Length: 380
Ligand SMILES: Cc1cc2nc3c(=O)[nH]c(=O)nc-3n(C[C@H](O)[C@H](O)[C@H](O)COP(=O)(O)OP(=O)(O)OC[C@H]3O[C@@H](n4cnc5c(N)ncnc54)[C@H](O)[C@@H]3O)c2cc1C
Image (cartoon, protein in one colour):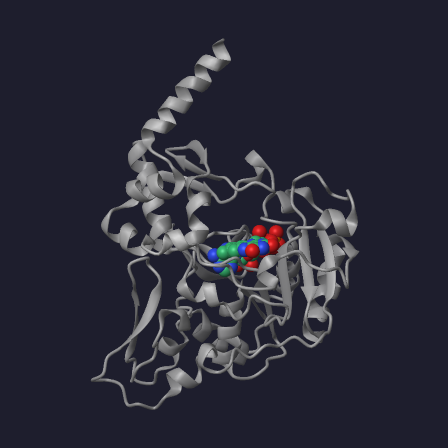
């Protein structure tokens, strides 16, 4: 059986692997580290369940009820929360509601075994565990066996909140095959998920350059450069190095399906959609305009409204229903950059130093020259 005819037709959600009654499907990374299913023909019984449960093969069912959706711009009442979040910390307000019900929250964290080198989904049952899921990680997250665990937890009556990209949320609903009153889903407006291999190789390059191990990571470090700019800070042996190297490359390295994303529109799949509130100045003027982050919350259906109605008590917010959103990925998928056609091959065969030079004009020599110039400029 042929499961994926084109690489664009798979988001790597692992649904097929999880539902296969014979365990005939394994997920195998391609050159850029994106996972694709591989079928062991000797085990496959051609039951077709893998295709039936695949959201990409089933017309990408959506779940938006409200037209237009109810929209809110705002941020968490506590500065400590929105400083620890990518946008305005609405994810914390929503997940707190679930944790207060002794529920379970799923989201993206650094991997349990591979650490900073890999991003994967995991569950949280305490606020300490949940805090690890905060902040955008600009790498495709491996869902592992989250969907199977969620199904068991829902059947046992647990309240579950699942957060992820549109394709991940769409895949979960298709995997489950029915609505659960005790499940809430939040999709993030997504520009495309960057290559897991690029991320790993980038960290290894930094470790080699600065002779140590990665001890911390801050994607899009807003404490250092503000919310609107995109710089990553990587700590090597406790010392921070901030750069735009990864920022310049990562969104050109997204998964092939991202460039044809069926979730990059206003017909949403989660009960709630969250995003950075770009264009906030037109909708709410100068309110919260301190470059510390503002969230946009879109409530897509009655189930989402029930969650928002409690979560909003922890938020300062303004009703922006009807505001025309500026987000390009709520209108169309990101366009593939033409100069990235050879990217996967180059990453695999020529290595990260070559990639950094070609796509970010970065070499270690440049770094040291810039550093010396800065030192002399200060002295002078
Ligand atoms: C790959 C990616 C692309 C994005 N593209 C856009 C965009 O085009 N426009 C825009 O406005 N905003 C984009 N965002 C930002 C996103 O909208 C914010 O993370 C969101 O607004 C949440 O903000 P917050 O402050 O409430 O929570 P935060 O604490 O910042 O975010 C935490 C939430 O993000 C989820 N998350 C983090 N990393 C990932 C990941 N790799 N895969 C799946 N889920 C993840 C967590 O599970 C959690 O639910 C993107 C985020 C990611 C990860």
